[in-house]
Length: 578
Image (cartoon, rainbow, N blue to C red; front, side, top):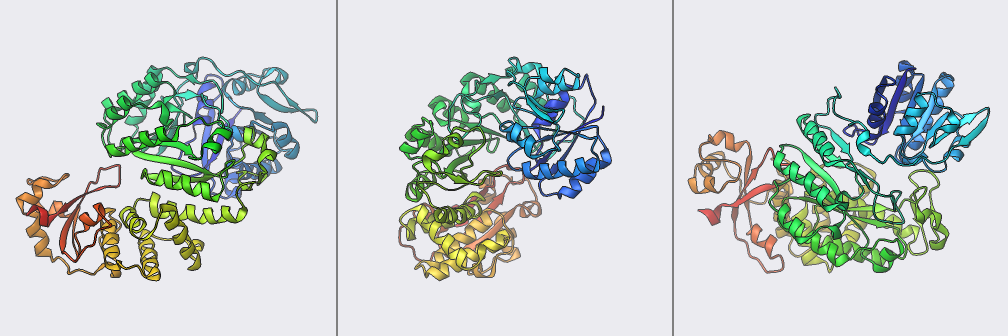
C-alpha cells in the first residue's frame, strides 16, 4: 500500500511534527511519503499534486487554520479517484468526529487524539472495530470506537527527526518534550491532561541533531515547558553549554513556576538564544477565576520584569479578547498592565471556542455568539459587543505593526508618556486615525509605516513635533530599516564621506564599539555602521521624556551586529566620547 501523509502549514517556513511522528512510528511496517503544503496554495494545486502522486491512502493533519481547505482538497481527490482512502487526524477532528463524517461522505477514517498506535494498528490490518481511537465507515454506517489510552512511555515513539534526510536549514522546527498540561484553563484543549515526559536524554539527543541541521528556530510546543522544574533546567542547561549560533529556542512558560534563582541564572545566557512566551490572558481577577486560571498577576508581573531586566531573552506576553467578565474597559486595563512591562511582543488574540473546551460546552452561561466554522472566533458575548470587538481588531493590527515589530519602540513610548494618559488611549486614538485614512485596506512597507506615524503627528498638532521626528529617525536607524532616510527625517546637516572616515579612525570611538575592533579596516567597519546628526540630545530625551529640551546637536553612531538574533544596535553618542 502506498501512503502519503500531508498537511497545510500556515507558512512555508513551518514544519509539521505530527506527520513525522506517524511516519517514524510505522517505518518498519510501511514506507511512508511526506509532503507539506501551505494555506496560501490553492485547493486545486494541492489536490493536483496529490493526485499525480496517486497514493492508496492520504492522511491529513488538521488544525483550525486548515480544516476547511483540507476538506475541499479531500472532496476533490475523492471525486477524481474514488478508490483513494482519505484519513484525517489532529486536534480539529478529534471532537465531533462522527458528525464530521456524516457531513463529509468522502472521509474514510478519522484518528482521534494521540494517533501513533491507532495509525499503526490500522496499517497492520487489525479488525477496525478493535482499533481504539478510530472512527470509520462500515456498510454505510459510521462507527466510533472507544478512546485510546495515551502512550505511557513516550520514548517508545521514535524521534521524528533523527535519521531523516530532510533539509531543515532556515526552517522553524516544532518539537515537544512532553505531552499534556497540569492546568485546567477553560478555553484550552490541553486542559487537565496528565503530563507525560520524554526522557531528558532523548530530548538532548534530538536537540543536538537539530542544531547540527542549521534550523532557524526550535519551537517547543509543550503547553507548559517548565511544569517540571528540574526537567526544564536540564534541557536549558544543555542548550547553554552547546552555545549554538544563529538559532533560538522558543518555550511556552508559566510565570509562577519560575523562581528568582532561575531568572538570575538566565540573565547570563547569550542574547537572543531563548524566546519565552507567557500566556497571561487577562489581569482581571474575576475573569481568571472564571476560566480556572489561578494566576497571581503580581507574581507574573515581577517575573516578567526580571526577565526584561536581563535584556537577553525575547519575551512574548499574550492576552485573550472575549473572556468571561472581560468588557472593553477591563480589557483596556489588562492591556495597560502588560504594556507597562514592555515585553518584546504583546500579542492580542481573539477567543476561539474550540471543540471540546469547557467554555464551548458552557457557552450559554456567558451568552457567546461565535462562528460555527473554524476558527470558531467569538463575535460577542454578555460583556463585550461586536462593535467593541471590531475596534479591538483594528487596535490589534496597530499593536502588531507599530509595537511588536520593534521599529517604533522609542517613538511610541515618548508619545504615550508626553501626550497621553495611558498606553491603551494612544493605540485606540492612533487606530481611529489610521481607519480614517484607509490604512487597514492595504499592505505597507516598513518605510511607509513611518510616513503614517509622521502624518498622525501633524494631524494631532503635537507641540514637540521636531523632537518626535528626531526620535523617529533614531528608531529608523536603530532598527536598520534603510540607510536612506525619508525626506521628513532629513532635518539635520549631512555627514560627508570624509567625516565618516575621520570618525571611524578615532581610537576612542573604535574602542567603545561592541562588534568591531581597531584592527579592522575602516572600509569594513563602514559596512555595518551608520552615523547621523540629530538636533537634540536624543539619548537623554529617550531616558527622560517629560523634561523640557532645547536644540543640542548630537552625532550618533549605530553599530549593527550581523549575527545578532535580536534586532538591536549598539548606539554611541560621539559628543560624549570625544
